[in-house]
Image (tube, rainbow, N blue to C red; front, top):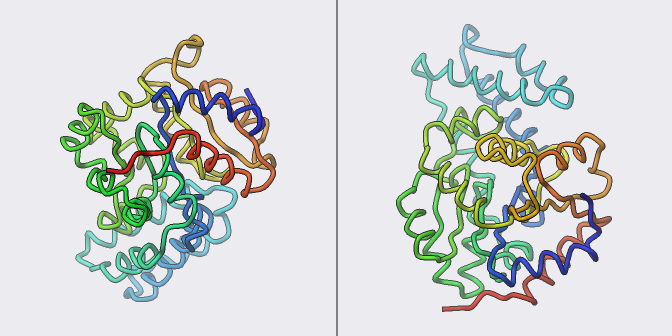
Amino acid sequence: MQYTMTDALPIITKILSEGRLSIFAGSGISVESGLPAWDGFIDKYIDICEELNKSLEPCYQFTDIISDAKASKDKNLISTITALKGKVKEIKTHGINTDFCDDELNALFYGAIPCDYHKTIVATNYRHIITTNYDALLEKAAKQEGYTSLLTRAYSYTEQQNLSMAIYSGKTAIIHAHGKIADIKLDQFVLTEEDYLAIMKHNPGFRLIINSIFLTNSVLFAGYGGSDPHFEDIISDLNMTLNWNAGGAELPRCYIMLKKDKVTPIREFLSDKHRVDIITFDEYTQMKDFLKALEISCPRSKP
């Protein structure tokens, strides 16, 4: 189902006021902080791989794959990234150190400051704050805005015991579903569905934690665009696990905020199939206003 922001606001506000709403934040919320959105990050990833390639001896270079990646990234993005990551992994098996590339990747995220999106999200009484972003801007916002208790409960997907304790105690946590800045490696970055499923396979406790959140909360997705595959990965995995594709009205729902020109018939079909309601807007300022209205209606208490 599709909603305008005007129609969706009372629905989402009611769920939030009942303590049954979590938020899932994508790369779009960090664009105002100077970080790249999904498309921009892919361009940077290719650039770093090209820099690595130039440093290699000819027998290890993969110039043809780099050229093909640049030419085909818009048409076959997943195959492009899978090939590049596979090549980097292969290079490392020959004892070649790629730390300088890892450092350049990490440098993308350092020095950025929180924007209004981060501040509004931490100031709103969401049950949990989940993000696929590696940056620490939500934590920085929590510190700046005085939510010090929330700041102490920011975890990577690998910290399953701490996450479990936060959920059991009923306290809000910031959950990095793909890891934190310190986890970034050129050949380990979570970019494709295969990467995401590998996290779930090798960290069954985290998968259980995520499913428990979706079992007990409706979830609002913010900052996910038309080209960002992570939203589909998460929802597909959830529905495969819980078999909710044809569930009833009493089950939790997911809501995704999308710019109108990003709502394609295919996305609309998949959203209907996977119990996801689309909240449309014309300008990004409207999404910011929507999130701010939620903050005003249900602010988070400071310690």
